[in-house]
Image (cartoon, rainbow over all chains, first blue to last red; front, top):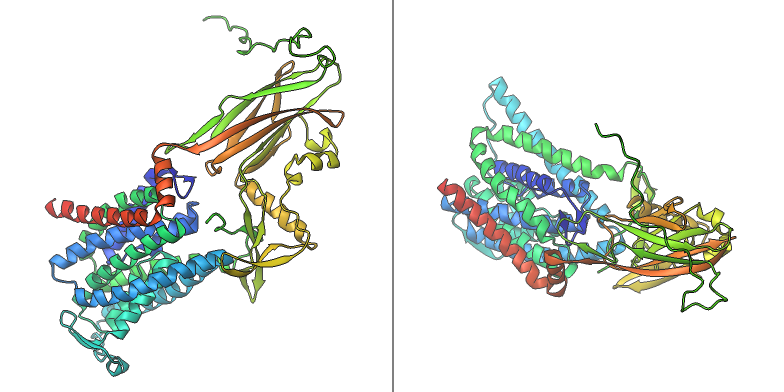
Length: 305
Length: 275
């Protein structure tokens, strides 16, 4: 099937399958799954800028179906999510312009590779370490270490305090806002929702109630990636609706299936598996920085527009 | 078993010999070498099933003398400026250099000929006619200049130096790897005396627009006749509508994409809850 914006011909059943596989992972772990999709699309020969922009709408769809499920269980803090989304929109604006500028400089692929390596590498390694030590401890029958329930003190020193009853927080709006900006920039550059960074920060730094973390981050992701998609389409004309629809068809089904399977595994085992995947993708994407390219010269995209 | 039949005669009859009595030609030029050609398809339509196209070019050589003549088919797509970066190793990491802009590079270029181009005509002749990937007029820069483009400072529009040739060769090599540039030294087949055919293969990534085709006839290294044809590659149907919509009204297009995505997510969660 020919993609009108990407201007390449693709094998469409493969794309639906890819959407389903990524949707499954995203439903299983409660993440957007964007970080997995972009590298595979690029590997399939779709121009990176189109891949990053088009799969953002896949993230919107899978997050929407996730939020609906979580909100029916009352597990979404809309106030917290709204504050973060506000930051996310600002971050998306910033990120899309940054991405545009980097493309013109011919450095876009480099920055994408670097961000994947840095963020996914670090997060993946941390997750793997944390979950593996937990699994080992359980195997040896040692009691779980008492969790440090204190939040960092600087969270209380900031102005603009807002009450977030659902998250059980009374903190400044600045950290969630900043977190949102960060996720927005990532969403524009890497085409990811940023759940893999948001969830740990919300859990371990803000110390939100664990039950509402995933639902809230998904809610934030819908708005941020939605705005990113609109901006990418408006500024860069890189959103391919045919590509994203194909991914969506598989994605929404996969996500539901994944969500049902998620109850069957232990939390730390899931985190270990996710850590492996995240670390692997990060290293794979970062590899191009260190391997001698087969051709020293490369075409840089971004002339036409 | 039916005995095997001899191969059927070619579907297309041999071209009529040049008739000296052709009314529009004077007696003086009737004995001239001439080439005529036509494409089986003058329009390539890019739709959802498009995965490249192959167009056959047919032509006839009117050669009254007995000196052999060579045919060269050149297909040139719409211009598509190329930006190139060079990977350089800095502290163990491969980084991109500043991009260099090559203007005047066609988005598609192919030559097919009866013999290697260098045997058909000499370097100067080919360079003058711009025939062959090595003779493309990819903007030969007279001087190095950096300008501000699209709000980005210090974009090198062109650069002169020893490595200029490396850069130029890289443009052609990369385009060849993408099957957008091709050189086929025996792509012109004579199917019968005076009648030849050549195949134009467009990859799925071929740019849309107008393609100019030149069919040259060379004799003793000199161009003696040329026939010009055009070929149009255009998006049609839904592909065209989507492309136009995305470029004419990008913001509404973006909003629609997001709504579509959100709706599908909503629909899926509805569907599965019931199930």
